[in-house]
Amino acid sequence: MFRLYFKHLFPSFSEWQDLPFAPWQFNEGVLFSIVGFFESTLLQEDFYLNEKLQCETFMDSGAFAAETMNFSLDPYEVAELHAILAADLIVPLDQIIFPEDTDKIIKQKVEETIKNTEILLDYRPKKSEVIGPLQGYSLDVIKEMFEKYRELGIQKFAIGGLASPFQSDLTMALDIIKTARNITKGFFLHVFGRFLHPRLLKLVIETGADSVDGFGYILSSVRGLYTLEGRYEVIGNITEDQLKSCSCPACQENSLQDFQRGDEEAQYLLIIHNIHSLIQLKELYIREKKENNKKKE
Image (cartoon, rainbow, N blue to C red; front, side):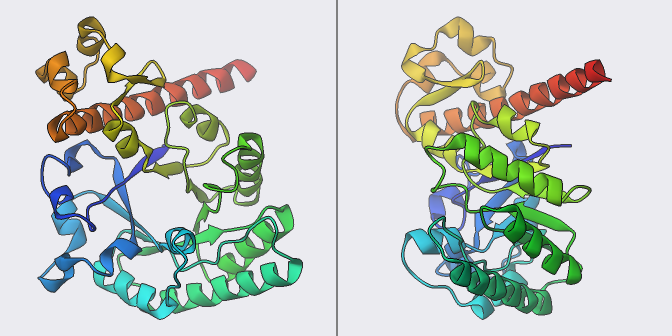
């Protein structure tokens, strides 16, 4: 079953650690960046991630965030923090491969990523499963990384590096996901990036990937965007009838005025609605995919 992981600000901001900004009961799973925990006050106490959240937890290495913010992470520190947090799914510190990288640089980055994976395997908590991050833009590089991960016994994979370079080339991004899916056939494949979006979700499901994560539902909620019929719509354009036609608790238990106040509580209501709507869209697209596959048979 295709799964959504909702990226969250839980470790970084205290107001996101309790209601109304931590609606864990609405999540299929939650993805965090381990970068957020480096300076978190949570770890100064007896803190157990899964006990606190009571849902499946996916911990990214923070490599992409570090790259965009121009600072370096130590693979041992990342592995140590993974060992403390013990998320269900954990990702080693991978090196981001860019289109302009030479073959020599790509080779170095692949080798370093595999070395960092070996470090994480040494620190891995018993309950955590390591995800092998696949980087690169060619079949050969993705296949090489996949085979090296398999030699290490890894059985779950994620395709990364698709967020920034492909903002203007969606077709290329989807082609790379399909390439990764063909290489990893029979294994779990996650898609990192910006695909947890009402207009992109169907496209990524059609690639055959198993899950996707995203942060956009928060940004869209803060901007006052409401998921409606597979797209984002400005909340000011939503009618009371459209609101009440949604079955989610935020829409059923609150008025349109509550959504349109523009304060933090309104943002929270939009977050709940957008989470529910994305899950419903996912289920709709999966049903459509199954029906189309039956017709082809």
